[in-house]
Amino acid sequence: MKIYSDPRLLALGIIHGTAARDSGNMRQPENVRTLFDALSIPPDKILRFKQTHSCRLVEVSSLQQMQQIRQAPLQEADGWVITKASGYGAAILTADCVPLIIWNEQADVVALAHCGWRGVAAGLPRQTALSVSRLNGGGRLYAWAGPHIQSCCFEVQQDVAAQFPGCVLKKKGKLYVDLNKEITRQLTSAGLHETDIALPYYCTCGDRDHFFSYRRDHTAEALLTFIYRP
Ligand SMILES: [Zn+2]
Image 1 (cartoon, rainbow, N blue to C red):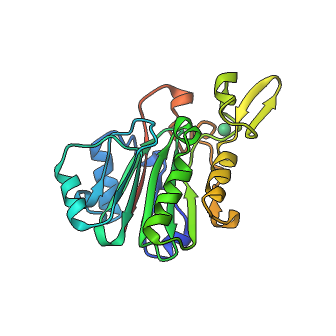
Image 2 (cartoon, helix red, strand yellow):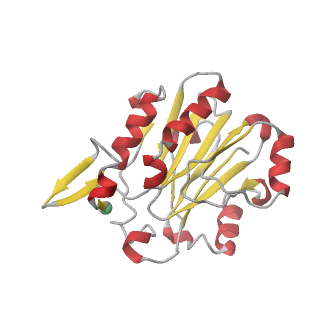
């Protein structure tokens, strides 16, 4: 069972990461259960939501608010910002989109966002960082992204390329978007230091052995990225 994670966040005792495809398709609830069992994550403490490639973030800063969300039907959102006071954690599904985690110095505010290219173009990484910053009172922030489609495979047409000025590569007459470059630009504009942003180069589309990829396979198989404070 391979899990991609960030050593800085592990050192703070936060269970998190992206499970590689050897854990199976995470749209199957039994695969999620098996993963969470292995990591001692209580499934009833993990928030899920209805992902819509939007820019909608939900901030949860009290246990009461967390319990209300747990009891309500799944809401449409693409990012969660959760404080220590609210307990719990969150999980998202991806298959090429960027699973982005942002946290403050002690990880008592953590965010998990599902950033598709539409979300990135609409400014979701920056909005997520600003939200963590607001709940944290403006201290130093850190970021990490799990495996997602990289510029080697993210070929686009002119209409999409036009939404990523300065982040488009041309190779043999084709256009490719570098999402990492745009995410770095947004996070630094929200106050993060470039050296505190880790965007490891794992390409979901290019590495069939480890990842599911919608662009490559056109199936609904998905990876899970999760975060939980024990
Ligand atoms: Zn690739």
